[in-house]
Image (cartoon, rainbow, N blue to C red; front, side):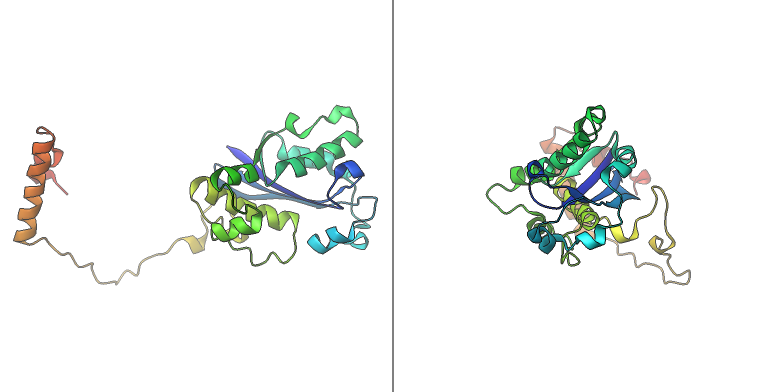
Length: 241
């Protein structure tokens, strides 16, 4: 299963008011594991960024002056996300902006859902935690995901944090170790911990007579309760581990 965790930053809150995407960040997961592949791009929006938006993400018009426009990167972006399930927090916001950008370039490009399925982690969080705060910072705190580097919003950083949050929220894996991603199937040298060849043997503690009697009594009780179905009593003692 291929998923792409996606986030965007924009010039303002409303695409219907002519606001544009200025940053796209994507992180690839395959079978719930980070592959190390990502997509990241800043964009020239051809309009001023709202001061309130600058306070959120810290991106200025001067910084974006020499960056490509959406039309310059659209094929690379669509090629990266095509066929994946997009994982987005408050998906209607990001998908709405991307759909508007696609529409600016003509109807032949269609909409996001022509290329991808979409999973909204905000809807997932609200279902799991009704009545609670479910923004990304609140979820990081709830699931013990490190967001200490998130002084300002950034599309790629937020996509990486959201990937951790999504995995913790949907299946129990807490950390992707996204700063140290490796290609799928690749094992790094630091992941192998070898025991010293001269280490002392492990101490083996055998059950004493009282413990063996208590164990046998418990097996007899299980056998009686199950109508003779206790497999441990049926096992040949000579083959037991």
